[in-house]
Image (cartoon, rainbow, N blue to C red; front, side, top):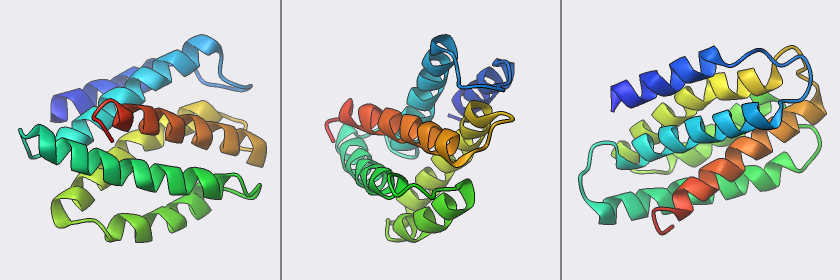
Length: 143
């Protein structure tokens, strides 16, 4: 599992920096990284597909809630983190660990998507892209 997260983080580091909006190729690469990170977090600590489905549903619920909050027009990475932590805290202990691992793995993806352009609009777009990719990954687990 740690190898997959490490591979995902290395792939993010290999992407060129974004001074403008990410290109379609950069967005596709980020989507793959998000899918891998979400899959690793969903499967963390359990070989049981039933557990994965429950965890994926919990992660999808959080991502959907955060996506709705992201539409407010004033999102920053700091406000997103502040809104996210109480939602994660409601999960069971194993799920909290998995969710925090996912958040940690996705931090570099968001930073890469923002690059040198951390405007509110760019932040909203990057956050929405990440959250939509998480929701899609959770759907693959039946959430």
